[in-house]
Image 1 (tube, one colour):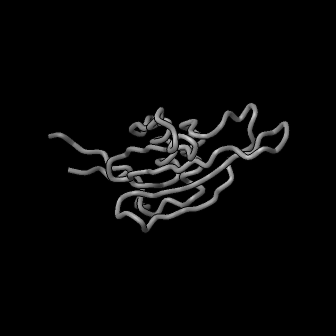
Image 2: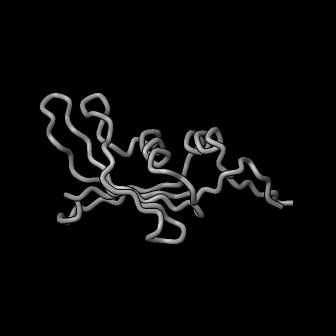
Length: 121
């Protein structure tokens, strides 16, 4: 049995919603030294269950552009991962990933999205 939380399906997340999730997760340069991330690209049709977004930030002290971040949000599995463009070309490439946590889930619920909860009965 599913319990419906909101009335908006997760596949209708907007670029602004994803940018807010990125902010909550901390998947952008430190806001202490960098301005808010700037959206470069938003795609919700490339995959059936994943939204892809690219963004950069600009350093507050000299307006230098950061590396490009590519963020993938799988709304069926409640998971995300992101890469940084400079890491792709190095042997020490990192893969930043996790499941959504409580702060991100609270945000989605507050925005009226249907975050499925399952009754294990």
